[in-house]
Image 1 (cartoon, rainbow, N blue to C red):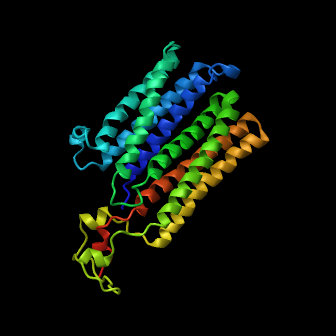
Image 2: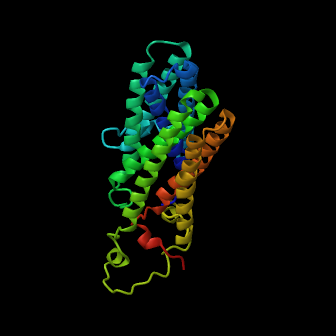
Image 3: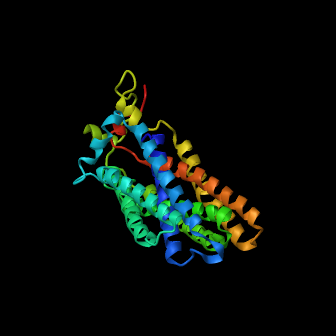
Length: 316
């Protein structure tokens, strides 16, 4: 598949927003509000950051639409389409994150029920987004439970790292707990992503050149794509990069998405340096992990082999 940057930004930014809200709401339930001088302003900032990230993700999604003025029609097929369900749930998440942030900012007493509703919506949004791809059975790389697991854990890991970075700047008392959580989630997300990669490496294509054209000869070799020039099929369903590029991106996503941020987070936990040093280390972990997750999401789409490419894989 040919990944659109608008979709890459949509899924990474929104996943981080959902993870951030879930982590901070969990911290509120665990009684971290008020601990070590941590006031409601920190949670208000976190909720506002989740809202801003989700809003940016929504804005990015419009760049992938041929007719943005008709975007509202995407919700019409909610009974059968996971995409329509995502279109409905995303604004609900925006409202929940904003309401939770506003409640903490004003010192209202209803932040926990609002946060609970926002957390449920965040989980539903993970489900809707992942199932858009996991439900496409003819793309074997996506049609797996690993898609839902990885979308959820990667979102939680990035959200926890962002929460730790915010704590480093505004709530030092929460840095140890949030950093430990971010480290654990990053390692678990890396392990499950590795399991998905191993699973995809063992896949045997259900379609071949022989089955595509109905000829059983074992040495068929395609010499041309069948077009004088490019078409929608050749542009949208194949990224045009070679196997070497995919291998390079895979190592980048594992190194910068898992190994380097985990090392930085572990350094903060083990050495317990000054608050200013922790701020810079956590900010660096967030930046490095963000770049790695952009690479991960590009790879997720690029690795998927659409069956139609059996017809258009070669250029004369």
